[in-house]
Length: 467
Ligand code: HAM
Image (cartoon, rainbow, N blue to C red; front, top):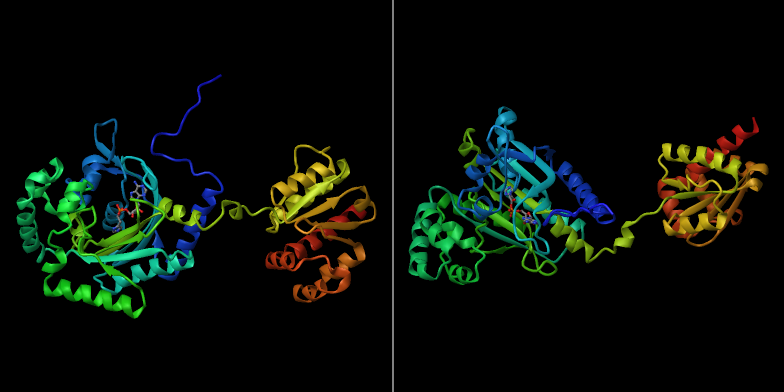
């Protein structure tokens, strides 16, 4: 036997039907982004290592411990992106900044060399948005309201919005001083990393995952206590705007986020249950200095990123995977070679007009019974039975698989039904002669008008047979 290969540790295959859940999350996000005026940006997954070190910060866990670094043939250090904000800002400065502000969204994989566990992977997907050139706090509120709507649409209620302000260049020094003196008093108990970070980048001590450090930082001073008047009124206004939209939130004085670029507003949506310690579904915040730090002109900005795996873990608790499998509208069941030829032609015609149709393509002599079994297995809604009889007597024989109800229509009825308009046809559905459809089936078929389309195409094909 040849060697079998396994997926790389911390990486995952997203198989159907889970992939469908991903797609649904993306689809819904796209709809909301469109309504809120965000446009898609497609970015490379590989960027220069320095871009991330400069923007996320060299003392952060992400840059210190979690980067997938690649060297190209010229010895240049590149990295698989651990997040997309840095890339969006680079691209904005490069190609969009001359057009003014931009509201952008993205969907794609990110890479962090973390210890894998539930909700934490080395490749994971993010849906993110960045509003560049918007000073806020109206835009801060807009992004949060967008997320609130998104979660409402997904019927996810068990999420808490946590909010804080980290202040700006003006208020940071006083806060830093106070934090350093608090941490110095507890220096001996801090982990090795934090002892080093204490002087270099004390804010990073606050997001250390070590339990002893966490216990110490629990009572550390908060940046929100040191806000300058501008930052303070920004934060007040944001909270007022959110309250006016009935978006509930909790101010979390200890929320600092693990990336260096944040200023003023930071926020997370955290799951109350279902995700264990990896409970942050969304992280975001303002980064008013980053565009300038990466070589652009001073431009305020804010954004967020949502972890798709964490979202689908929450959704999987609500949605049964089986419900994600939607079977074909029609399954064509044939008896004999002539019927196979007829069904084969009908199949592609139906698909061409938007109907999800299936048949067994590779076994023309399969029995009717076993074709029905397959149709049931793939959850087909209805079967079209094409046998000698149907071809000879020019009949449409349709069976609603869920209920077992059958409908047989001759050419005359077909002509009558396919010649009328859909609304009129719906009224015929309830007349005794046409009482083939269960209310549910009528509903599903009426939605995509699959039956109506089938009747027309079937009629055309039968008439061709005559010629
Ligand atoms: P972040 O908090 O590092 O922020 O990541 C955002 C979200 O990505 C997290 O809340 C989580 O749902 C998901 N996530 C992060 N790491 C993992 C992992 N190893 N496995 C699974 N999911 C993960 C950022 O990435 C910022 N760029 C967000 C941002 C955009 N801020 C401003 N603009």
